[in-house]
View 1 (cartoon, rainbow over the protein chains, first blue to last red):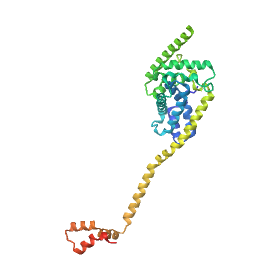
View 2 (cartoon, one colour):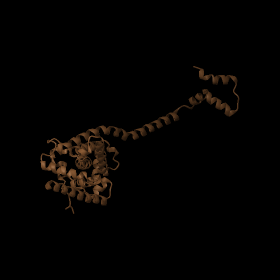
View 3 (cartoon, each protein chain N blue to C red):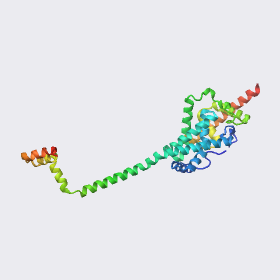
View 4 (cartoon, rainbow over the protein chains, first blue to last red):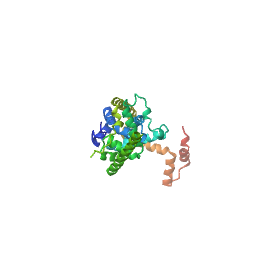
Length: 191
Length: 112
């Protein structure tokens, strides 16, 4: 796993943003490799479909590169990018291309695009089901922390919340997810 | 501290490394293309202010050159034949012009 922001401090990101603005392709690729996973996590927290989250993350990153001059604080590129991701993900939801009732379409995805491991697909389905019951901020925090390995300080800076709030969201999210996963497992084994 | 961490690895986009790498490469390729397009207006915007400043400086120097090197005789003869200047001069001096001067001045605009 590649923690999204563990590779370098904000200064490093700011330097990459400045170089990318000047058309430096390696800097642009470095930004993509550093931040695309987090973009995917936030997209997934909104659309809750793996395939669609990939599309949204990709589109949002490209839009961010197109509007890179609008990023007023290059050191806070992550937060700026994630805001774009969130907006685009919500737009995709509202555009009617995704129906709330069909949030688990990933299981219908073509075998070539999904993991061949059925158990992994099933676990993914369970996790997304459980995530669906969380408020949006909790989904983002738990995915950025437990999936992407971000620290609370990084999450707080990127999402515009306090570190205390980040910890609270994580605590609540984990507890709710565990309860939901346990309930589901119990229901399956009980019958 | 992180003993409570949930195992969300099933949601890891890099669980299928080839697929993820392809996504990253597609994203980078598209991003480079849009940066190339976006960099043209950005370049114009970056150079617009210095270019305007240079043009303004050039205009100022040109005007100064013309102003300070133009022969004063040409200026006075031009103003003498100008009806508006003549009327102002007559009003300031309080001296009535003779008929010939009046006709010459007011009719000057129709001369070829």
